[in-house]
Length: 67
Image (cartoon, rainbow, N blue to C red; front, side):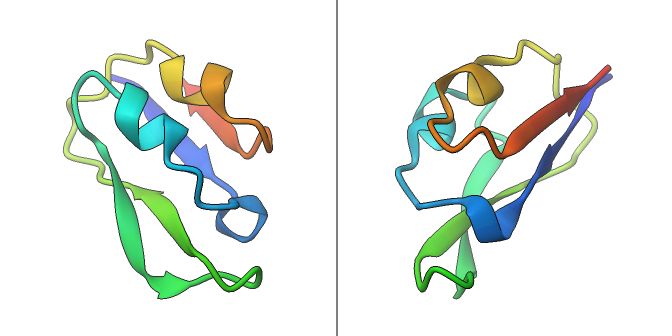
């Protein structure tokens, strides 16, 4: 299984990664980041396939996928 790392403070809250995750493993965080927006976090439950859709659509390039 894969894991992703999100640089929360670089996230601008566009939610493109959340919408494009086929397994729904990216969710909005309740806390604000340094930009003052609700960033996203990775819900690690061991189901990530490492498809990289989240990283490919992120305009801020703040997501890394590890397989």
